[in-house]
Image (cartoon, rainbow, N blue to C red; front, side, top):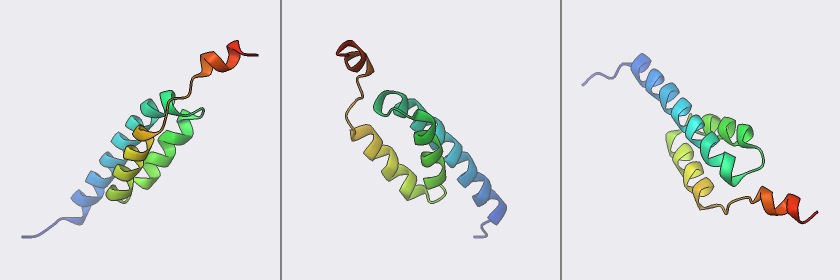
Amino acid sequence: MNVNATLVGQLIVIFALVVGVISYFIGRRKTQSPILAGVLGAVLSIVPLFGLIYLVVLMLKSDVNLGAETASR
């Protein structure tokens, strides 16, 4: 079975974009810098296993409660 390298590259790019978007939306709730979370997820997804591990770690992280932080000041 022949594997086309262009197709594999396109699948990796699409996977990186999807994981980057998912990381951004999870990062909005879990971090104070969701853009950085999305970019880091996309970069780590160049190796798909690292991208999946990053998503699991991000999902297991506790939520950032910004409302309570500003109310206590």
